[in-house]
Amino acid sequence: MVKDMSLKLEYIQIKDVIFGDQTYINKGILTINKDELIQEVGSPLFKSIDLDLAKPGESVRIIPVKDVIEPRVKVETGRMFTGILDGFELCGEGTTKVLRGCCVTTTGTIVGFQEGIIDMTGPATDYCMYSKLINIVVIAEPVDGITPAEHEAAIRMVGLKAALYLAKAGLEIEPDETETYHLDPVDPAKKLPKVAYAYLIMAQGLLHDNLVYGINAQQLPALHIHPNELWDGAIVSGNCVTASDKNTTYDNQNHAIVKELYDRHGVDLEFCGLFASPLSTILAEKERNAMVTVNLAQQCGADSLIISQEGGGNPEADLMLICERAEKRDIKSVIVLHDNPGPDGTSEPMANTSPMATAVVTTGNDNCIIRLPEMERNIGHREQLHLLSGSPDDCEQGDGTIKVGVLVIMGSTSNLGFGKYCTEAC
Image (cartoon, rainbow, N blue to C red; front, top):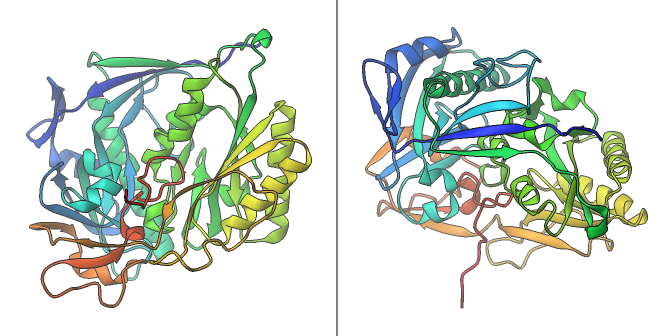
């Protein structure tokens, strides 16, 4: 019998974060030596780097947000993020310390127009899970003349280094809770349906890319990976797609669909495979990844395949190709996506459809309009609000409030199951 990978996550609950002379954790309070952390993440591509804190309930807006990362570190190596800040010794096995209840959030002058906001109070918090976390915000201002691609790569590294630096403070701390992840064999007598998951990740170039083991996903075909590798930072966000449906690094570390499949494994289904399938703009590559993804599902004996997209529009072609190929091989498909039917819901909601897509889960209308109050404090660049995708020309209402599409809110229509449906009870 093949032995499955086993990963223990040791959670340290962070109740508060403050600045001090040393970086350490005591009774759930994370104290950060600001100067030391800034020195740790420094880069010649930034003319200044600073830190700030945003806590749930405070009248604070973080704008524009690039990425959100949960501090994690491997106990065995003291490292994290395979292929980027770590070698290729251990990913998905062993023990990983997790600082739960806080996150590293990166901001600064805008990288791509599809960045977003995190409000720590007000109606936007209903749509943003990061609003419930203590945000340790890294404000990195690039030097003049830097290209958007250089800026994105540099600020990505700053965020990852900051998260690892903070996580190391928990290496000697007793965890408040532990979870062990491994996929036990399922008794065939149970006759549970075998369910696989196709995780579609951005690989479209022009700031629309993720990294898998440190490699730009553009260079990879669809891959069969173990879900534990997600928890250990195998997939890192490097993209600047619309804020509402961008999968941040935090999302990959805490993937809600994968978590539920794990929870239900051996109960009412058998979680038989996870495939990271790149989203390309090139038709031949879309067809290749659809073929490989469905081949992998068939090799795993899948009865059903869940498919989720990242971004919108062009990626819907990938969704439908994989759906059609799966259905033709008698693998029942379930699609997870947001829709774009306009603010009043009367426009065409998707760029591509298929009559074989008979099971579709929508995570909400990306185009819904929401009014948000002004915050007492802004971290980052409040003046760049009008540059965000989803911010209309009349976003400034003149009374201190702003009118924007929910797509400017980080994770508001997450296709990974984190968000809140954009509906209201009648």
